[in-house]
Amino acid sequence: MSSLHHRHLAVSPEWLALYYRHPLEITHGEGRHVWDADGNRYLDFFGGILTTMTAHALPEVTKAVTEQAGRIIHSSTLYLNRPMVELAERVVSLSGIPDARVFFTTSGTEANDTALLLATAYRRSNQILAMRNSYHGRSFSAVSITGNHAWSPTALSPLQTLYVHGGVRGRGPYAHLSDEEFIAACVADLEDLLGHTRDAAALIAEPIQGVGGFTSPPDGLYAAFREVLDRHGILWISDEVQTGWGRTGEHFWGWQAHAENGPPDIVTFAKGIGNGMSIGGVIARADVMNCLDANSISTFGGSPVTMAAGLANLSYLLEHDLQGNARRVGGLLIERLRAIAAGSESVREVRGRGLMIGVELVRPGTDEANPEAATAVLEAARAGGLLIGKGGGHNTSVLRIAPPLSLSIPEAEEGAAILAEALRAAE
Image 1 (cartoon, rainbow, N blue to C red):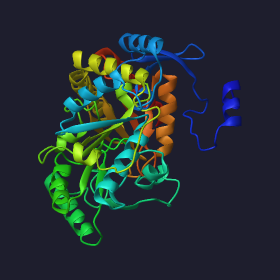
Image 2 (image 1 turned 135 degrees about the horizontal axis):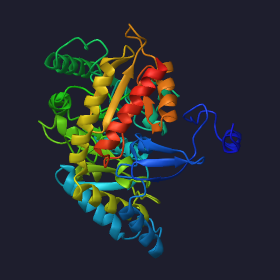
Image 3 (image 1 turned 90 degrees about the horizontal axis):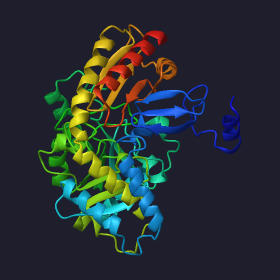
């Protein structure tokens, strides 16, 4: 055990998880690579949990942070803040929500917490519809709507949560149906659920479930849900903490795969927009955002430094068409991983979009999740110089692959080759 690991254990909660048998201390990064305290270099296919979205040590972001820190680091939302207004203007223009307003927070958890506050205040109901296998953050309210047992440490809740079918296409009671039949069955289930309960405030859903193992429904499910929700006056919250900003390649926002009946009422975001700086936020149409009848501020949300980073990062992403790169390079990477999976009895499915890819592992010859194999592959990939993540529903048996969106084709090929060797080593 390293000295730092020993010190960590002495002062940190037991439930604060660390990856790897011998935990890794990352000291610096550049582009798509990071280095540990022993000088080992790794190709980073997880980006600090999808947060280093553009590149490590991106000069444009570093310069913006340094220059802003040299002027003023903090003021709070009690004062006018030019970088915050400028970033809000850009986010509103990209949101797809008419007459939108933005409130900045410091994390995705806090963004979802704010969205729940807005929805319950607007609808005067504490009832929330959430998706099975979902994850929305670590706060008391966010945990209470999380449909993933591994990340929900308490049954106590300020909200009444009802869980809806549809977030997982390949498992569950509707897995055998065609996409059209799957959507129809999920809509029928939602209709039935609403017939047995009081008015709900909102449905919150990740277009692609992150912690749940990069699972998603067929395109159009949430558009079909929207027809039902609108009849009941129920708001739609799209949790874009992991799917936003072009990561899926095909769309800038994950909800756009379900856009037939218009945009969500509320969108939450975080992670990649700051490229490592602590930014979250809520976008909502004006009447929803303005429904609160009490004062509210954010001490650290909208910090001049983080807003400067967000502006620089968003500009770089748009100017260099990183969404297009995610589509092109991510498509190639998924093809390579599916070719590798075809020769492995341990891989049940390779799924995802753009640079948001899940590899689900099972016990050979069965459909049973294999979390031990996921852990073994994680270790073997590290030994080969590749960092990946893991997740999944009932068991943590899905490899999560989400590199920075500037990933090159040679780096994608290199990562796929390392992962192929790691899968062979773990079998």
